[in-house]
Length: 291
DNA sequence: CACTTGACCTGTCCGC
DNA sequence: TGCGGACAGGTCAAGT
Image (cartoon, rainbow, N blue to C red; front, top):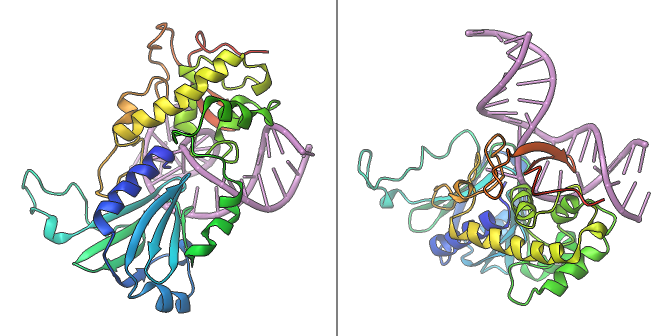
């Protein structure tokens, strides 16, 4: 699923495509994905205008003129895709939308917006969800209470980074990176990519990683996620942006899903192992475990 | 406690 | 071709 860069790209796309539009009606194809009561739908959703789209960690927030907000988590396979038939050029046209027919098998919720626009929430695995709550109560969500700082903010310094990892000194570094309460937004792809960049074995205990490597990791986390945003995110299976386009970061990836290929730094063969219960890609030469 | 495992779901891929 | 099992970008709860 979308990690921070992918959610950021979706946010930017939605900002461009749906802010200012009104929600006219919606079709809920899978209740499990849409945790909103019928009363709330009628009172706070239908007829409301979309006023802003925001992101915090991997959570998307769509603010409405009703004083309520939609909170959306895409989890592993969620997509938010905007379609406006008027923008399509027609089959065969070189600029035609690469969008397939929507809704499709994975569509869970279909929003009918003004100006003939549709917003589709697709989610093959049904792990994702949409909630509706008063905008003022968003900061009270348990998720918002415990989630760590945004690592791409200018104000997030290397000292902040080091301080956040202190309390996890006995954890494996990859587990700590994936823990959203330490810092926000890192998932499996960018954990592997940044650990390779900092030449740290993912199973190293945080407290045993040399300070210089921890500082390097701070830089690498920011580097790989900023680069990914530049490249439109990573599409390894399902990810698409709000326009239905794939991201290209994985063609720049150094280790993620590159087992069997050679390490760009030392040419040794990249291997896939298991760390913190997740598939993990490393260069066995560059990334030596610190014991 | 801190960490690991299983669960949530559907789809795909790989080996037999 | 069919079938079983492992695995997939995330996050909880439950178990050790």
